[in-house]
Image (cartoon, rainbow, N blue to C red; front, side):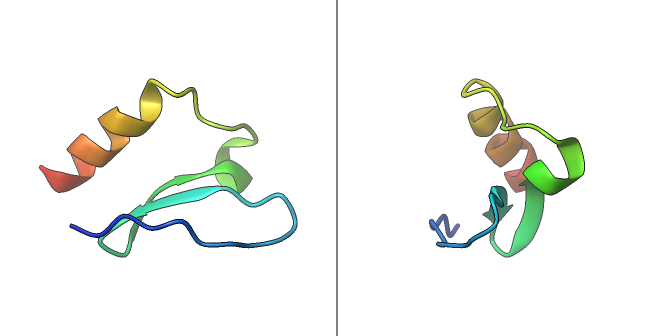
Length: 46
């Protein structure tokens, strides 16, 4: 499993797990709630 922070510009916020995009602020129009992030990672790994 690889988790990394990647610097970007333009207000982008994306979460990837092993190279797979699991969350995109550009798609949802909002930042995830902190409780959502662990759930997204676990779901991506299962």
